[in-house]
Length: 209
Image (cartoon, rainbow, N blue to C red; front, side, top):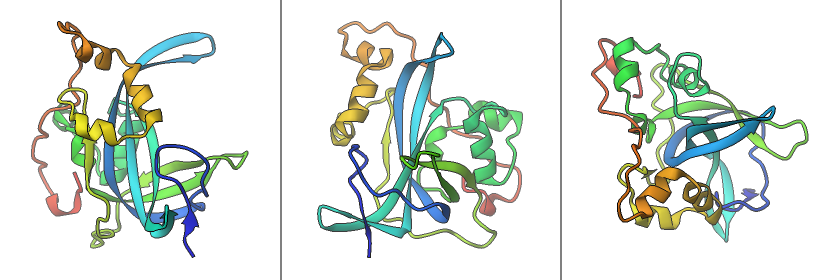
């Protein structure tokens, strides 16, 4: 039987059980610059939301059976010591060269397969992405189910924005990048999400992005 869940808009739902799953990234959302407080210090950083589908776990959304989904929010930095940088290198099974890191296009992860390790928080309220890993060699991953979705504040598709949950829309609307887009004379310098990545020098078929 499928577990019961809502869409990514929030609300209560059955969590994806802990374990390691074949999955595929299907959605990348630019959340803009977000301010967080840690130990009394405010910090503003560009954030993204990465979403994966897990076809082996099915969910019932308003009577329609769909693959389970899990998502993780990252600071938009692929420095080797950043959470996103470490996840990407584990995902692709290969470290970045300096040139690749400088020109990496984060949108290239959409559609890429991977292994996802899911854990639950101590209080049992949340399912978390504990690790993102490369697919075993020769395994191309599960067939895609959901359409690819990308929302970028660099070139916003307001149709895509309108399909996001109210909660995610509210987070994006709070960003200075979104607010600048609503101004008749925006003058905010928005950091690009990435440029076209350079070609890899070896083993191209085994690297998802």
